[in-house]
Amino acid sequence: MNKEPEDIEQILPYGELLRGFMEQSFVGKGDLKDVLRNRGIFTRNTEKHDTIPILSSTILSPSEFDYLRECQNSKEDNPKIITQTIEWQSEETLFDSVPERLDINSVLDLEFSNFKVVGSPNFVPVDGNPDCIRMDFSVEREDMSKNWATNRSVFPGSLELKRIEEEGEIKLVVTHTANETKYVASKVSTSLVKHFKDRGYIDPSKNIEKILFSRFTNPSRIIYLLSLTESCNSIMLNFVDIVDIEFSPDTNNPLPQGIDWMEQKIEDLKLNGNALHQTFFFRDKSYYDFLNLYKVDSKFKFDVRGLTGECVISVGFPDYGRTKNPDAEMEVNIRTMSFDITPRGVSKAEIKQTLLKEIEDQKVKNFKYYGRIQDA
Image (cartoon, rainbow, N blue to C red; front, side, top):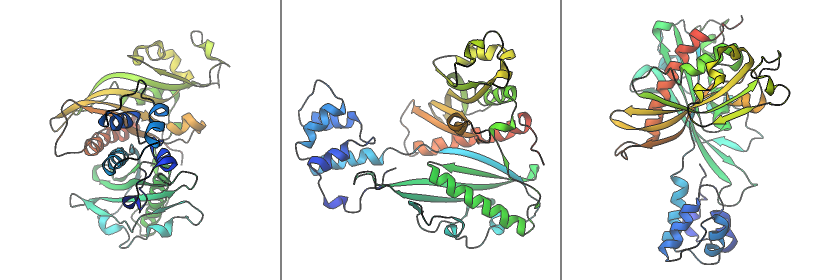
């Protein structure tokens, strides 16, 4: 999220400064409409290009400015989860195995970067478990191309390591909200794996197991993604519908009759609607060999400790959609979430994390079944 300027408590912007503040995405048109209506001002149109000129030609009261600032603070960046695994061959706990003092900045190359890690984060046991440890961190980015209100942004991230004794491996879970937090977590995990290999906790010949686009055949990728959506096996989540899919035709072979209309015409196809899993793309399995499915968004009903509602969970390989890189890594995130009754004493972020971990456990388990064995 955007970080407020340090002197924001001492200023009350007006004119062009106020216009720049209100134009930012974290201030919605409904927020501006509420400020005007509280003044007794009603406009025919509520788009920003109608309301901003009215407000920027006046002076906001301190309470009105505080209200708009809260609009920024209440909007959090959507966390995304990446999961990796690697074999473990030590009886030492993870907490005892990590470096006693991890200097996170020493493993990063940030000399010419416009961001930095805030403070000196380190690993701590999760719920007192020495075989499940997590490092939470924040990255602050400075972008001088933006205006005074948004040139500094702070993004949270985390790296969690958990020992799965029955599988003889450790699981590395990266939670990121921006490219910078993804970069930091990736660098730290690489450094840790090297440290573990140097200490003999991990076989030097073993590599981190990643869930990559290229680790599936076209049919197994489709079946894998569907196993996390319409075939999801969870006591917390009840599948409702597939609402968005994104795929591209595989141009390595001529397309069969029925979807040959896509050949040399369609690079990517994005569909949104209802019951997309019942379209002919999914019903006719003879098409599976010819489709590069890389994103599925599904609606679920959830029940977490008695808190119920609906959410849309996105599973797939977003980098493949952008770059067609076959080494794009699997990501999971919750696009939207709504509650039947507004929860008290628990935040939406906590419920999101619980549901993300529920999906994350299944995606690792199912990958072992549907993914291809990594080449030596």
